[in-house]
Image (cartoon, rainbow, N blue to C red; front, side):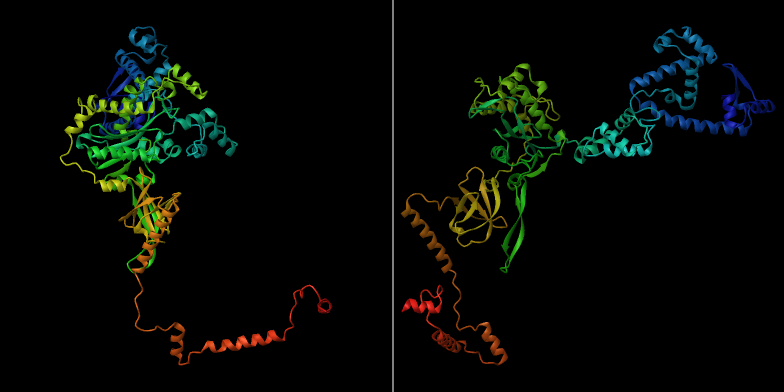
Length: 626
Protein backbone atom coordinates (compact mmCIF):
# COMPACT_ATOMS: atom_id res chain seq x y z
CA UNK A 1 0.00 0.00 0.00
CA UNK A 2 1.27 3.49 -0.90
CA UNK A 3 0.48 6.63 1.15
CA UNK A 4 1.25 10.25 0.28
CA UNK A 5 3.53 12.43 2.41
CA UNK A 6 0.65 14.66 3.51
CA UNK A 7 -1.50 11.70 4.57
CA UNK A 8 1.40 10.11 6.48
CA UNK A 9 2.01 13.37 8.33
CA UNK A 10 -1.68 13.54 9.25
CA UNK A 11 -1.72 9.92 10.42
CA UNK A 12 1.33 10.34 12.67
CA UNK A 13 0.31 13.89 13.71
CA UNK A 14 3.74 15.35 12.84
CA UNK A 15 4.91 18.01 10.44
CA UNK A 16 5.96 17.31 6.86
CA UNK A 17 9.60 18.07 7.71
CA UNK A 18 9.57 15.72 10.71
CA UNK A 19 8.03 12.99 8.56
CA UNK A 20 10.78 13.28 5.92
CA UNK A 21 13.44 13.11 8.64
CA UNK A 22 11.79 10.01 10.16
CA UNK A 23 11.54 8.35 6.73
CA UNK A 24 15.23 9.05 6.07
CA UNK A 25 16.30 7.60 9.41
CA UNK A 26 14.18 4.47 9.05
CA UNK A 27 14.93 4.17 5.32
CA UNK A 28 11.35 4.02 4.05
CA UNK A 29 10.96 3.11 0.43
CA UNK A 30 8.86 5.32 -1.88
CA UNK A 31 7.81 5.90 -5.47
CA UNK A 32 7.44 9.23 -7.21
CA UNK A 33 3.96 9.85 -8.54
CA UNK A 34 1.99 12.96 -9.53
CA UNK A 35 4.85 15.22 -8.50
CA UNK A 36 5.22 13.80 -4.98
CA UNK A 37 6.47 10.87 -2.93
CA UNK A 38 4.21 7.95 -2.05
CA UNK A 39 5.61 5.87 0.76
CA UNK A 40 5.45 2.05 0.69
CA UNK A 41 3.97 0.87 3.99
CA UNK A 42 5.64 -2.53 3.82
CA UNK A 43 9.05 -0.86 4.37
CA UNK A 44 7.92 0.90 7.56
CA UNK A 45 8.21 -0.27 11.15
CA UNK A 46 5.36 -2.28 12.72
CA UNK A 47 4.08 0.58 14.90
CA UNK A 48 3.83 2.89 11.88
CA UNK A 49 2.07 0.22 9.81
CA UNK A 50 -0.43 -0.30 12.66
CA UNK A 51 -1.16 3.45 12.76
CA UNK A 52 -1.74 3.47 8.99
CA UNK A 53 -4.13 0.49 9.16
CA UNK A 54 -6.10 2.07 12.03
CA UNK A 55 -6.46 5.32 10.12
CA UNK A 56 -7.59 3.41 7.05
CA UNK A 57 -10.34 1.59 9.01
CA UNK A 58 -11.68 4.90 10.34
CA UNK A 59 -11.63 6.43 6.86
CA UNK A 60 -13.39 3.38 5.39
CA UNK A 61 -16.11 3.55 8.05
CA UNK A 62 -16.64 7.28 7.49
CA UNK A 63 -16.77 6.79 3.75
CA UNK A 64 -19.30 3.95 4.15
CA UNK A 65 -21.57 6.09 6.33
CA UNK A 66 -21.35 9.08 4.03
CA UNK A 67 -21.76 6.83 1.00
CA UNK A 68 -25.45 6.54 1.82
CA UNK A 69 -25.88 10.09 0.58
CA UNK A 70 -25.36 8.94 -3.01
CA UNK A 71 -28.53 6.84 -2.83
CA UNK A 72 -30.62 9.58 -1.24
CA UNK A 73 -30.32 12.26 -3.93
CA UNK A 74 -32.10 12.70 -7.25
CA UNK A 75 -31.15 10.85 -10.42
CA UNK A 76 -29.78 14.01 -12.05
CA UNK A 77 -27.54 14.66 -9.04
CA UNK A 78 -26.20 11.10 -9.24
CA UNK A 79 -25.41 11.64 -12.94
CA UNK A 80 -23.31 14.71 -12.04
CA UNK A 81 -21.47 12.70 -9.36
CA UNK A 82 -20.72 9.94 -11.88
CA UNK A 83 -19.31 12.50 -14.33
CA UNK A 84 -17.01 13.95 -11.67
CA UNK A 85 -15.92 10.42 -10.75
CA UNK A 86 -15.03 9.76 -14.39
CA UNK A 87 -12.91 12.92 -14.50
CA UNK A 88 -11.07 11.88 -11.30
CA UNK A 89 -10.42 8.40 -12.75
CA UNK A 90 -8.99 10.03 -15.88
CA UNK A 91 -6.71 12.08 -13.63
CA UNK A 92 -5.48 8.95 -11.78
CA UNK A 93 -4.47 7.28 -15.05
CA UNK A 94 -2.93 10.38 -16.66
CA UNK A 95 0.04 10.56 -14.25
CA UNK A 96 -0.07 14.36 -14.33
CA UNK A 97 -0.21 16.95 -11.60
CA UNK A 98 -3.58 18.48 -10.83
CA UNK A 99 -2.55 21.75 -12.49
CA UNK A 100 -1.30 20.00 -15.62
CA UNK A 101 -4.41 17.79 -15.75
CA UNK A 102 -6.78 20.76 -15.60
CA UNK A 103 -4.90 22.47 -18.43
CA UNK A 104 -4.93 19.32 -20.58
CA UNK A 105 -8.60 18.63 -19.78
CA UNK A 106 -9.71 22.13 -20.83
CA UNK A 107 -7.72 21.74 -24.06
CA UNK A 108 -9.56 18.51 -24.88
CA UNK A 109 -6.42 16.40 -24.68
CA UNK A 110 -7.68 14.08 -21.92
CA UNK A 111 -11.13 13.18 -23.27
CA UNK A 112 -13.20 15.20 -25.65
CA UNK A 113 -16.36 13.35 -24.56
CA UNK A 114 -15.76 14.19 -20.88
CA UNK A 115 -15.09 17.82 -21.74
CA UNK A 116 -18.34 18.10 -23.72
CA UNK A 117 -20.29 16.36 -20.96
CA UNK A 118 -18.85 18.72 -18.33
CA UNK A 119 -19.63 21.68 -20.56
CA UNK A 120 -17.53 24.36 -18.86
CA UNK A 121 -14.03 25.33 -17.79
CA UNK A 122 -12.51 23.12 -15.07
CA UNK A 123 -10.63 25.32 -12.61
CA UNK A 124 -7.79 24.09 -10.45
CA UNK A 125 -9.59 25.21 -7.31
CA UNK A 126 -12.69 23.18 -8.18
CA UNK A 127 -10.63 20.14 -9.09
CA UNK A 128 -8.60 20.28 -5.86
CA UNK A 129 -11.87 20.46 -3.92
CA UNK A 130 -13.15 17.39 -5.74
CA UNK A 131 -10.00 15.45 -4.93
CA UNK A 132 -10.17 16.40 -1.25
CA UNK A 133 -13.87 15.55 -0.90
CA UNK A 134 -13.46 12.29 -2.80
CA UNK A 135 -10.53 11.26 -0.58
CA UNK A 136 -12.58 11.94 2.56
CA UNK A 137 -16.04 10.64 1.60
CA UNK A 138 -15.78 8.81 -1.69
CA UNK A 139 -18.41 9.42 -4.35
CA UNK A 140 -20.79 10.96 -1.80
CA UNK A 141 -18.26 13.75 -1.26
CA UNK A 142 -18.51 14.85 -4.88
CA UNK A 143 -22.32 14.40 -5.10
CA UNK A 144 -24.09 17.76 -5.56
CA UNK A 145 -27.14 18.63 -3.47
CA UNK A 146 -29.19 20.83 -5.77
CA UNK A 147 -32.64 19.60 -4.77
CA UNK A 148 -34.70 21.52 -2.21
CA UNK A 149 -34.15 20.51 1.37
CA UNK A 150 -30.91 18.59 0.66
CA UNK A 151 -28.30 21.29 1.12
CA UNK A 152 -25.51 20.34 3.48
CA UNK A 153 -26.51 23.01 5.93
CA UNK A 154 -30.19 22.15 5.56
CA UNK A 155 -33.08 24.47 4.81
CA UNK A 156 -33.29 27.05 7.54
CA UNK A 157 -29.66 26.60 8.60
CA UNK A 158 -29.45 30.32 9.28
CA UNK A 159 -32.44 30.16 11.65
CA UNK A 160 -31.94 29.74 15.37
CA UNK A 161 -33.65 26.95 17.28
CA UNK A 162 -35.99 29.49 18.86
CA UNK A 163 -36.99 30.89 15.47
CA UNK A 164 -37.66 27.39 14.15
CA UNK A 165 -39.78 26.54 17.17
CA UNK A 166 -41.88 29.70 16.76
CA UNK A 167 -42.44 28.98 13.07
CA UNK A 168 -43.46 25.38 13.76
CA UNK A 169 -45.73 26.50 16.61
CA UNK A 170 -47.87 28.52 14.21
CA UNK A 171 -47.45 26.35 11.09
CA UNK A 172 -48.04 22.89 12.59
CA UNK A 173 -51.55 23.69 13.72
CA UNK A 174 -55.03 22.50 12.75
CA UNK A 175 -55.92 26.09 11.73
CA UNK A 176 -53.59 25.70 8.71
CA UNK A 177 -52.05 29.15 8.82
CA UNK A 178 -50.29 30.34 5.67
CA UNK A 179 -46.50 30.64 5.60
CA UNK A 180 -46.79 34.42 5.37
CA UNK A 181 -49.00 34.36 8.48
CA UNK A 182 -46.34 32.33 10.33
CA UNK A 183 -43.58 34.70 9.15
CA UNK A 184 -45.46 37.76 10.43
CA UNK A 185 -46.10 35.97 13.74
CA UNK A 186 -42.36 35.27 14.01
CA UNK A 187 -41.52 38.94 13.43
CA UNK A 188 -44.10 39.98 16.02
CA UNK A 189 -42.88 37.56 18.69
CA UNK A 190 -39.15 38.00 17.99
CA UNK A 191 -38.67 41.63 16.88
CA UNK A 192 -34.87 41.24 16.68
CA UNK A 193 -34.95 38.35 14.23
CA UNK A 194 -33.13 38.79 10.91
CA UNK A 195 -34.90 35.89 9.19
CA UNK A 196 -36.32 36.60 5.75
CA UNK A 197 -39.53 35.29 4.27
CA UNK A 198 -37.62 33.15 1.75
CA UNK A 199 -35.63 31.42 4.50
CA UNK A 200 -38.78 30.74 6.53
CA UNK A 201 -40.57 29.47 3.42
CA UNK A 202 -37.78 27.02 2.56
CA UNK A 203 -37.56 25.80 6.15
CA UNK A 204 -41.29 25.13 6.53
CA UNK A 205 -41.43 23.44 3.12
CA UNK A 206 -38.55 21.17 4.17
CA UNK A 207 -40.51 19.74 7.12
CA UNK A 208 -41.47 16.07 6.69
CA UNK A 209 -44.86 15.76 4.95
CA UNK A 210 -45.99 13.19 7.53
CA UNK A 211 -45.37 15.66 10.34
CA UNK A 212 -47.13 18.47 8.47
CA UNK A 213 -50.19 16.34 7.69
CA UNK A 214 -50.45 15.04 11.26
CA UNK A 215 -50.72 18.49 12.82
CA UNK A 216 -52.35 20.47 9.99
CA UNK A 217 -54.88 17.92 8.69
CA UNK A 218 -55.57 15.72 11.69
CA UNK A 219 -55.04 12.18 12.88
CA UNK A 220 -57.42 10.56 10.39
CA UNK A 221 -55.75 12.12 7.35
CA UNK A 222 -52.30 11.29 8.73
CA UNK A 223 -53.24 7.68 9.37
CA UNK A 224 -54.76 7.24 5.91
CA UNK A 225 -51.81 8.76 4.05
CA UNK A 226 -48.72 7.81 6.02
CA UNK A 227 -49.34 4.70 8.14
CA UNK A 228 -49.12 1.24 6.55
CA UNK A 229 -52.21 -0.91 6.13
CA UNK A 230 -53.00 -4.54 5.35
CA UNK A 231 -53.86 -5.03 1.69
CA UNK A 232 -56.80 -7.35 1.22
CA UNK A 233 -56.12 -10.63 -0.54
CA UNK A 234 -59.36 -11.04 -2.49
CA UNK A 235 -58.84 -14.70 -3.46
CA UNK A 236 -59.21 -15.54 0.24
CA UNK A 237 -62.83 -14.35 0.21
CA UNK A 238 -65.99 -16.03 -1.03
CA UNK A 239 -68.93 -14.28 -2.62
CA UNK A 240 -71.31 -12.64 -0.10
CA UNK A 241 -68.64 -12.72 2.61
CA UNK A 242 -67.82 -9.03 2.21
CA UNK A 243 -69.91 -6.39 0.42
CA UNK A 244 -69.36 -2.64 0.13
CA UNK A 245 -72.00 0.10 0.19
CA UNK A 246 -71.78 3.71 -0.96
CA UNK A 247 -73.58 6.63 -2.65
CA UNK A 248 -72.68 8.19 -6.00
CA UNK A 249 -74.08 11.15 -7.91
CA UNK A 250 -74.48 10.50 -11.63
CA UNK A 251 -72.76 12.84 -14.08
CA UNK A 252 -75.94 13.66 -16.00
CA UNK A 253 -79.19 15.58 -15.58
CA UNK A 254 -82.78 14.32 -15.66
CA UNK A 255 -86.22 15.85 -15.27
CA UNK A 256 -87.94 15.09 -11.98
CA UNK A 257 -91.34 16.64 -11.25
CA UNK A 258 -90.63 19.42 -13.75
CA UNK A 259 -87.17 20.24 -12.37
CA UNK A 260 -83.70 19.38 -13.67
CA UNK A 261 -81.76 17.33 -11.12
CA UNK A 262 -78.68 15.12 -10.92
CA UNK A 263 -79.75 11.64 -9.77
CA UNK A 264 -77.98 9.68 -7.04
CA UNK A 265 -77.55 5.94 -6.78
CA UNK A 266 -77.02 3.88 -3.61
CA UNK A 267 -75.32 0.54 -4.31
CA UNK A 268 -74.09 -2.62 -2.60
CA UNK A 269 -71.31 -4.48 -4.46
CA UNK A 270 -69.71 -7.85 -3.72
CA UNK A 271 -66.01 -7.32 -3.02
CA UNK A 272 -64.88 -10.73 -4.35
CA UNK A 273 -66.61 -10.59 -7.72
CA UNK A 274 -67.45 -6.91 -8.21
CA UNK A 275 -71.08 -7.80 -8.95
CA UNK A 276 -73.71 -5.14 -8.22
CA UNK A 277 -76.14 -6.89 -5.87
CA UNK A 278 -78.52 -4.10 -4.85
CA UNK A 279 -79.17 -0.50 -5.88
CA UNK A 280 -81.62 2.36 -5.50
CA UNK A 281 -81.80 5.37 -7.84
CA UNK A 282 -82.92 8.46 -5.93
CA UNK A 283 -82.87 12.24 -5.86
CA UNK A 284 -81.52 12.58 -2.33
CA UNK A 285 -79.52 9.79 -0.64
CA UNK A 286 -80.65 8.84 2.85
CA UNK A 287 -80.93 5.92 5.20
CA UNK A 288 -84.08 4.81 3.38
CA UNK A 289 -82.30 4.55 0.01
CA UNK A 290 -79.53 2.56 1.71
CA UNK A 291 -82.04 0.13 3.20
CA UNK A 292 -83.88 -0.15 -0.13
CA UNK A 293 -80.65 -1.25 -1.85
CA UNK A 294 -79.78 -3.54 1.07
CA UNK A 295 -83.27 -5.09 1.01
CA UNK A 296 -82.95 -5.79 -2.73
CA UNK A 297 -79.63 -7.54 -2.09
CA UNK A 298 -80.70 -9.80 0.78
CA UNK A 299 -83.98 -10.83 -0.88
CA UNK A 300 -82.18 -11.87 -4.08
CA UNK A 301 -78.88 -13.25 -2.78
CA UNK A 302 -79.13 -13.70 0.99
CA UNK A 303 -77.52 -11.94 3.96
CA UNK A 304 -73.79 -11.08 3.65
CA UNK A 305 -71.40 -11.69 6.54
CA UNK A 306 -69.79 -8.24 6.51
CA UNK A 307 -71.11 -4.93 5.17
CA UNK A 308 -68.41 -2.29 4.64
CA UNK A 309 -69.97 1.16 4.18
CA UNK A 310 -68.92 4.77 3.80
CA UNK A 311 -68.42 6.94 6.89
CA UNK A 312 -70.93 9.61 5.82
CA UNK A 313 -73.79 10.85 7.97
CA UNK A 314 -76.38 8.73 6.12
CA UNK A 315 -74.58 5.54 7.11
CA UNK A 316 -74.01 6.70 10.69
CA UNK A 317 -77.63 7.61 11.37
CA UNK A 318 -79.74 5.91 14.03
CA UNK A 319 -81.53 3.69 11.52
CA UNK A 320 -78.32 2.18 10.08
CA UNK A 321 -75.86 2.34 12.97
CA UNK A 322 -78.32 1.96 15.84
CA UNK A 323 -78.56 3.97 19.03
CA UNK A 324 -78.64 3.78 22.79
CA UNK A 325 -81.53 5.30 24.76
CA UNK A 326 -82.62 5.67 28.38
CA UNK A 327 -86.04 4.29 29.26
CA UNK A 328 -87.95 3.51 32.46
CA UNK A 329 -88.64 -0.17 33.12
CA UNK A 330 -90.00 -2.28 36.01
CA UNK A 331 -87.86 -5.11 37.33
CA UNK A 332 -89.11 -8.45 38.67
CA UNK A 333 -89.75 -6.91 42.11
CA UNK A 334 -91.92 -4.20 40.57
CA UNK A 335 -89.40 -1.45 41.24
CA UNK A 336 -89.15 1.25 38.58
CA UNK A 337 -85.65 2.03 37.38
CA UNK A 338 -83.99 3.71 34.42
CA UNK A 339 -82.17 1.43 32.03
CA UNK A 340 -79.91 2.11 29.03
CA UNK A 341 -81.32 0.22 26.08
CA UNK A 342 -79.26 -0.59 22.97
CA UNK A 343 -81.39 -0.36 19.83
CA UNK A 344 -79.50 -2.15 17.07
CA UNK A 345 -79.39 -0.77 13.55
CA UNK A 346 -81.16 -2.32 10.59
CA UNK A 347 -78.14 -4.01 8.99
CA UNK A 348 -76.96 -5.57 12.25
CA UNK A 349 -80.51 -6.71 13.08
CA UNK A 350 -80.68 -8.59 9.78
CA UNK A 351 -77.47 -10.45 10.70
CA UNK A 352 -74.59 -8.62 8.98
CA UNK A 353 -71.54 -7.21 10.70
CA UNK A 354 -71.30 -3.47 10.00
CA UNK A 355 -67.91 -1.76 9.62
CA UNK A 356 -67.06 1.74 8.42
CA UNK A 357 -64.47 2.88 5.89
CA UNK A 358 -61.42 4.82 7.04
CA UNK A 359 -61.71 8.56 6.22
CA UNK A 360 -59.47 9.81 3.36
CA UNK A 361 -58.72 6.19 2.46
CA UNK A 362 -60.07 5.41 -1.00
CA UNK A 363 -58.47 1.94 -1.02
CA UNK A 364 -60.93 0.73 1.60
CA UNK A 365 -63.80 1.01 -0.95
CA UNK A 366 -61.80 0.22 -4.07
CA UNK A 367 -64.48 -1.97 -5.66
CA UNK A 368 -67.05 0.82 -5.38
CA UNK A 369 -64.69 3.49 -6.74
CA UNK A 370 -63.76 1.37 -9.79
CA UNK A 371 -67.42 0.64 -10.51
CA UNK A 372 -68.30 4.33 -10.39
CA UNK A 373 -65.47 5.03 -12.84
CA UNK A 374 -66.94 2.49 -15.27
CA UNK A 375 -70.39 3.94 -14.63
CA UNK A 376 -69.27 7.42 -15.65
CA UNK A 377 -67.39 6.28 -18.75
CA UNK A 378 -69.89 3.80 -20.19
CA UNK A 379 -73.22 5.12 -18.91
CA UNK A 380 -73.20 8.85 -18.14
CA UNK A 381 -71.20 9.79 -21.24
CA UNK A 382 -73.69 7.99 -23.48
CA UNK A 383 -76.87 9.58 -22.12
CA UNK A 384 -76.67 12.79 -24.13
CA UNK A 385 -76.81 14.86 -20.94
CA UNK A 386 -73.31 14.24 -19.59
CA UNK A 387 -72.10 17.22 -17.55
CA UNK A 388 -68.74 15.93 -16.28
CA UNK A 389 -67.69 14.86 -12.82
CA UNK A 390 -65.80 18.14 -12.28
CA UNK A 391 -65.36 21.53 -13.93
CA UNK A 392 -62.29 20.47 -15.90
CA UNK A 393 -64.17 17.50 -17.39
CA UNK A 394 -67.00 19.68 -18.72
CA UNK A 395 -66.85 20.77 -22.30
CA UNK A 396 -67.69 24.34 -23.28
CA UNK A 397 -71.21 23.35 -24.30
CA UNK A 398 -71.93 21.97 -20.84
CA UNK A 399 -70.54 25.08 -19.16
CA UNK A 400 -72.98 27.15 -21.22
CA UNK A 401 -75.71 24.64 -20.40
CA UNK A 402 -75.27 25.06 -16.65
CA UNK A 403 -75.09 28.81 -17.06
CA UNK A 404 -78.47 28.60 -18.78
CA UNK A 405 -79.83 26.47 -15.95
CA UNK A 406 -78.70 29.05 -13.42
CA UNK A 407 -80.58 31.61 -15.50
CA UNK A 408 -83.72 29.45 -15.18
CA UNK A 409 -83.75 28.65 -18.87
CA UNK A 410 -85.73 25.59 -19.99
CA UNK A 411 -84.32 22.54 -21.70
CA UNK A 412 -86.68 19.93 -23.11
CA UNK A 413 -84.27 17.28 -24.45
CA UNK A 414 -83.56 15.53 -21.13
CA UNK A 415 -84.88 12.18 -19.94
CA UNK A 416 -87.76 11.75 -17.54
CA UNK A 417 -87.19 10.14 -14.15
CA UNK A 418 -88.93 6.85 -15.01
CA UNK A 419 -86.74 6.47 -18.12
CA UNK A 420 -83.57 6.93 -16.05
CA UNK A 421 -84.59 4.25 -13.55
CA UNK A 422 -85.34 1.85 -16.42
CA UNK A 423 -82.02 2.67 -18.13
CA UNK A 424 -80.06 2.03 -14.96
CA UNK A 425 -81.69 -1.37 -14.42
CA UNK A 426 -80.69 -2.48 -17.92
CA UNK A 427 -77.19 -1.02 -17.64
CA UNK A 428 -76.49 -2.81 -14.33
CA UNK A 429 -77.60 -6.07 -15.94
CA UNK A 430 -75.20 -5.43 -18.84
CA UNK A 431 -72.37 -4.65 -16.42
CA UNK A 432 -72.90 -7.82 -14.35
CA UNK A 433 -73.13 -10.11 -17.38
CA UNK A 434 -70.89 -8.52 -20.04
CA UNK A 435 -68.17 -6.42 -18.39
CA UNK A 436 -64.87 -8.35 -18.36
CA UNK A 437 -62.58 -7.45 -15.48
CA UNK A 438 -58.80 -7.48 -15.20
CA UNK A 439 -58.86 -7.25 -11.42
CA UNK A 440 -56.81 -9.54 -9.23
CA UNK A 441 -58.42 -12.94 -8.71
CA UNK A 442 -61.08 -12.57 -11.44
CA UNK A 443 -59.16 -11.74 -14.59
CA UNK A 444 -61.10 -12.52 -17.75
CA UNK A 445 -64.38 -13.09 -15.88
CA UNK A 446 -67.55 -11.05 -15.79
CA UNK A 447 -68.86 -10.04 -12.33
CA UNK A 448 -71.65 -12.61 -12.64
CA UNK A 449 -69.22 -15.41 -13.55
CA UNK A 450 -66.87 -14.51 -10.71
CA UNK A 451 -69.81 -14.31 -8.29
CA UNK A 452 -71.16 -17.75 -9.19
CA UNK A 453 -67.69 -19.32 -9.30
CA UNK A 454 -66.93 -18.25 -5.71
CA UNK A 455 -70.41 -18.65 -4.27
CA UNK A 456 -70.42 -20.64 -0.98
CA UNK A 457 -72.55 -23.75 -0.65
CA UNK A 458 -74.79 -22.37 2.07
CA UNK A 459 -76.26 -18.89 1.73
CA UNK A 460 -77.93 -17.25 4.71
CA UNK A 461 -81.56 -16.77 3.72
CA UNK A 462 -83.27 -13.81 5.40
CA UNK A 463 -86.06 -14.30 7.94
CA UNK A 464 -88.78 -11.99 6.67
CA UNK A 465 -90.15 -11.25 10.15
CA UNK A 466 -86.67 -10.18 11.24
CA UNK A 467 -86.25 -8.14 8.07
CA UNK A 468 -89.57 -6.41 8.74
CA UNK A 469 -88.38 -5.60 12.25
CA UNK A 470 -85.03 -4.35 10.94
CA UNK A 471 -86.46 -2.02 8.31
CA UNK A 472 -87.94 0.29 10.92
CA UNK A 473 -86.99 3.45 12.76
CA UNK A 474 -86.95 2.85 16.53
CA UNK A 475 -87.81 5.46 19.16
CA UNK A 476 -88.60 5.34 22.88
CA UNK A 477 -92.18 6.46 23.55
CA UNK A 478 -94.55 6.60 26.55
CA UNK A 479 -97.95 4.94 26.13
CA UNK A 480 -100.80 7.42 26.63
CA UNK A 481 -104.55 6.74 26.83
CA UNK A 482 -104.77 7.14 23.04
CA UNK A 483 -101.76 4.89 22.41
CA UNK A 484 -98.33 5.96 21.12
CA UNK A 485 -97.69 9.34 19.53
CA UNK A 486 -94.94 9.73 16.90
CA UNK A 487 -94.87 13.21 15.46
CA UNK A 488 -98.50 14.22 14.99
CA UNK A 489 -99.77 10.66 14.52
CA UNK A 490 -101.17 8.39 17.23
CA UNK A 491 -101.00 4.59 17.02
CA UNK A 492 -103.31 2.26 18.95
CA UNK A 493 -103.68 -1.46 19.58
CA UNK A 494 -105.76 -3.36 22.14
CA UNK A 495 -102.57 -4.79 23.65
CA UNK A 496 -101.63 -1.26 24.81
CA UNK A 497 -104.63 -0.92 27.14
CA UNK A 498 -102.69 -2.10 30.19
CA UNK A 499 -99.46 -0.23 29.40
CA UNK A 500 -100.63 3.36 29.93
CA UNK A 501 -97.83 5.44 31.46
CA UNK A 502 -95.11 2.90 30.63
CA UNK A 503 -92.27 3.40 28.13
CA UNK A 504 -91.88 1.13 25.12
CA UNK A 505 -89.79 1.01 21.93
CA UNK A 506 -91.88 2.00 18.91
CA UNK A 507 -90.51 0.85 15.54
CA UNK A 508 -91.99 2.89 12.69
CA UNK A 509 -92.10 1.09 9.37
CA UNK A 510 -90.03 3.00 6.80
CA UNK A 511 -92.32 2.11 3.90
CA UNK A 512 -95.69 2.00 5.66
CA UNK A 513 -96.29 4.96 7.98
CA UNK A 514 -99.68 3.59 9.06
CA UNK A 515 -98.34 1.04 11.53
CA UNK A 516 -95.63 0.56 14.14
CA UNK A 517 -94.18 -2.45 15.91
CA UNK A 518 -94.22 -2.04 19.69
CA UNK A 519 -91.39 -3.73 21.64
CA UNK A 520 -90.35 -3.89 25.27
CA UNK A 521 -86.92 -2.89 26.60
CA UNK A 522 -85.50 -6.32 25.67
CA UNK A 523 -86.61 -6.02 22.06
CA UNK A 524 -89.53 -8.46 22.31
CA UNK A 525 -92.40 -7.56 19.98
CA UNK A 526 -95.54 -6.81 22.02
CA UNK A 527 -98.00 -5.86 19.31
CA UNK A 528 -98.61 -4.04 16.05
CA UNK A 529 -100.26 -0.63 16.48
CA UNK A 530 -102.14 1.23 13.75
CA UNK A 531 -102.47 4.95 13.02
CA UNK A 532 -105.57 7.12 13.16
CA UNK A 533 -107.75 4.81 15.21
CA UNK A 534 -109.32 7.70 17.18
CA UNK A 535 -109.46 10.33 14.43
CA UNK A 536 -112.97 11.65 13.78
CA UNK A 537 -114.37 10.25 10.54
CA UNK A 538 -117.50 12.39 10.25
CA UNK A 539 -119.80 9.56 11.33
CA UNK A 540 -120.35 10.56 14.95
CA UNK A 541 -122.42 7.53 15.83
CA UNK A 542 -119.82 5.08 14.54
CA UNK A 543 -116.96 7.02 16.16
CA UNK A 544 -118.68 7.04 19.56
CA UNK A 545 -119.51 3.36 19.27
CA UNK A 546 -115.85 2.52 18.61
CA UNK A 547 -114.55 4.68 21.47
CA UNK A 548 -117.10 3.23 23.88
CA UNK A 549 -116.11 -0.28 22.89
CA UNK A 550 -112.45 0.50 23.57
CA UNK A 551 -113.31 2.08 26.91
CA UNK A 552 -115.36 -0.97 27.80
CA UNK A 553 -112.42 -3.23 27.04
CA UNK A 554 -110.09 -1.11 29.17
CA UNK A 555 -112.54 -1.27 32.09
CA UNK A 556 -112.87 -5.00 31.63
CA UNK A 557 -109.10 -5.35 31.73
CA UNK A 558 -108.95 -3.44 35.02
CA UNK A 559 -111.88 -5.44 36.41
CA UNK A 560 -110.14 -8.67 35.55
CA UNK A 561 -107.42 -7.67 38.02
CA UNK A 562 -109.37 -6.84 41.27
CA UNK A 563 -107.85 -6.28 44.69
CA UNK A 564 -107.91 -9.31 46.95
CA UNK A 565 -110.90 -9.45 49.37
CA UNK A 566 -109.82 -9.17 53.01
CA UNK A 567 -111.36 -11.31 55.77
CA UNK A 568 -110.94 -8.58 58.41
CA UNK A 569 -111.16 -4.82 58.73
CA UNK A 570 -107.61 -3.43 58.62
CA UNK A 571 -106.55 -0.77 61.11
CA UNK A 572 -105.08 2.52 59.97
CA UNK A 573 -101.71 3.72 61.17
CA UNK A 574 -103.15 6.12 63.80
CA UNK A 575 -105.09 3.30 65.46
CA UNK A 576 -102.02 1.11 65.45
CA UNK A 577 -99.96 3.92 67.03
CA UNK A 578 -102.54 4.50 69.79
CA UNK A 579 -102.69 0.83 70.67
CA UNK A 580 -98.93 0.71 70.87
CA UNK A 581 -98.90 3.49 73.56
CA UNK A 582 -101.88 2.19 75.55
CA UNK A 583 -103.96 5.37 75.14
CA UNK A 584 -107.57 5.18 74.05
CA UNK A 585 -108.25 6.47 70.57
CA UNK A 586 -109.85 9.93 70.85
CA UNK A 587 -113.32 10.39 69.38
CA UNK A 588 -112.82 13.44 67.22
CA UNK A 589 -116.47 13.52 66.16
CA UNK A 590 -117.65 14.50 69.69
CA UNK A 591 -115.94 17.87 69.41
CA UNK A 592 -117.52 18.92 66.14
CA UNK A 593 -121.07 19.87 67.50
CA UNK A 594 -119.56 22.10 70.18
CA UNK A 595 -117.55 23.97 67.59
CA UNK A 596 -120.64 24.47 65.43
CA UNK A 597 -122.73 25.73 68.42
CA UNK A 598 -120.09 28.24 69.44
CA UNK A 599 -119.93 29.64 65.94
CA UNK A 600 -123.78 30.00 65.92
CA UNK A 601 -123.84 31.99 69.16
CA UNK A 602 -121.25 34.41 67.84
CA UNK A 603 -123.33 35.01 64.76
CA UNK A 604 -126.45 35.89 66.83
CA UNK A 605 -124.62 38.62 68.81
CA UNK A 606 -123.52 40.40 65.67
CA UNK A 607 -125.76 43.23 64.30
CA UNK A 608 -127.69 42.34 61.22
CA UNK A 609 -126.02 43.71 58.16
CA UNK A 610 -128.08 45.51 55.55
CA UNK A 611 -127.61 45.40 51.86
CA UNK A 612 -125.69 48.68 51.80
CA UNK A 613 -123.75 48.20 55.05
CA UNK A 614 -120.44 48.53 53.31
CA UNK A 615 -121.26 51.91 51.79
CA UNK A 616 -122.97 53.90 54.59
CA UNK A 617 -122.49 54.58 58.28
CA UNK A 618 -124.93 53.21 60.86
CA UNK A 619 -126.63 56.63 61.36
CA UNK A 620 -127.16 57.09 57.67
CA UNK A 621 -128.57 53.58 57.46
CA UNK A 622 -131.23 54.34 60.11
CA UNK A 623 -132.36 57.42 58.18
CA UNK A 624 -132.70 55.42 54.98
CA UNK A 625 -134.60 52.54 56.59
CA UNK A 626 -137.04 54.88 58.43
